[in-house]
Amino acid sequence: MKKTLPLIVTLITLSLLGLIILQASWLKNLIEVRQAHVFNKIQTVTTQVATDLSYAAFAGPVIRLPRKSNKISAEFHLRLLKPPSIGDKFTPQEIYAKLRKAFDDVDLKKMKFEFAIANSDGDYEMQSLNYAKEFYDTTSNKRIHNYLVPETGTEIDQVVQAEQMIVIVPDFTKQVWRSLQWIIIGAIIFMLIIIAAFYVTLKSLFNQKKLSEIKSDFINNMTHEFKTPLATISLAVDAIKNEKVKNDSDRFQYFSNIIKEENRRMNKHVETILQAALMEKQELKLNINRIALHPLLNNVIEAYNLQLLEKNGFIETNLNAKNDVVEADEVHLTNLLSNLIDNAIKYSKDNLVIKISTSCNNKIFSIKIEDNGIGMNKESVKRIFEKFYRAHTGNIHNVKGFGLGMSYVKTVIDAHKGRIKVESTLGKGSTFWVELPRTYTSKK
Ligand code: ADP
Image (cartoon, rainbow, N blue to C red):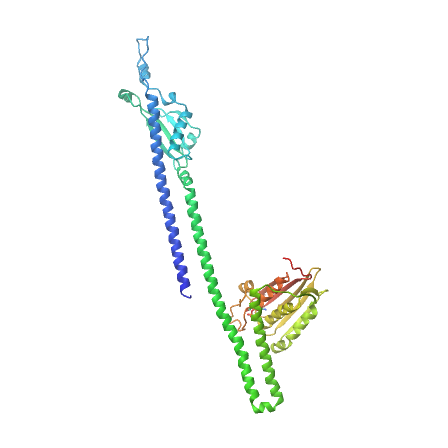
């Protein structure tokens, strides 16, 4: 697992990068090919329309001789020789319609265009509405010139220069992009789906890795937690077997107390593990009663007197809440408070002082538990309620535990529809606020 995970991450990342690069270059090629293809089509259709127009304009009799006059000026000659212009024969609407139809016929239905007809001197005979506006944009527009050459009359060719039909396709690249938009959007969506799948796979792999680490941590902790009392019990039993101890009632009492105490400790561990296993399977079942919290708190505090004495610490209480009655489950609430006080003692430094205070309003009863212990960093504060979570001990502390206490606390508070808040500074201490609704409601 240690080596395969980075390998999997590298392989998937590489293949994903490869896919993205291939996809991008494929799209780039597609757009270039499409641009060339569309431009070709436009050239073909405009040439076709230009030929049609020329044919229609110049197909009729070209020279009309005056009937009466026998003096024909050179200018008149020229006028006579000049074929009718496209502008004479067609309206702009007709030319637009021809072009539109030609565009539509080759599947360029959405392609916008502007056009103009210019005479041989370069003056415009007609132009579409936005032609002048689009004319000067030479970067994003494509411009196509077609000469409107008469089909017959070589002499005439020599006299006049041909007219021109100019077609402008505004925002050519954008229009081509637009025609490909569904392909591009599809490619992006599928790419995002692949990235999302990659993310989910990696996340679950990391979760699995975390779980297996948690599992081995848990087994290590559990082994330690059970081995120590077992070793102590074994030593105490050996001592009791000794004749000298058997005859000395004080020493006998001392060793049997040790056995009793270690037995109690192991029982507590088994309880914690069983509780966690139960919480996994089903929601916490509450046995709700009206409870006076101040006496309950005092009882819990009293149970820690011995441990506090050993640590040279003390608990300062300020139980100021006017009304201490809440509807709650007594057993779970006792465990909850024990867990919080237990941690405050477990994760303490020298000169341990724990301050416990209470307050209330009409709806909520609050308990504040403040310690001057080792404290936690931000990451630990965020994750403290996760099952099996334990702050990285390193050289900070060497206290063993299962990382189940705080997740149990959170479950109990959630079951009571209460709230818990933690603030902590590494090296300075932690404060926990527990808020319980005074009246229990089972609804969410
Ligand atoms: P455990 O104490 O068995 O490790 P908990 O769920 O009770 O598990 O606590 C989770 C972690 O939160 C502890 O390992 C510890 O790092 C941190 N923690 C809890 N309470 C305190 C506290 N009062 N001061 C400092 N750290 C604490």
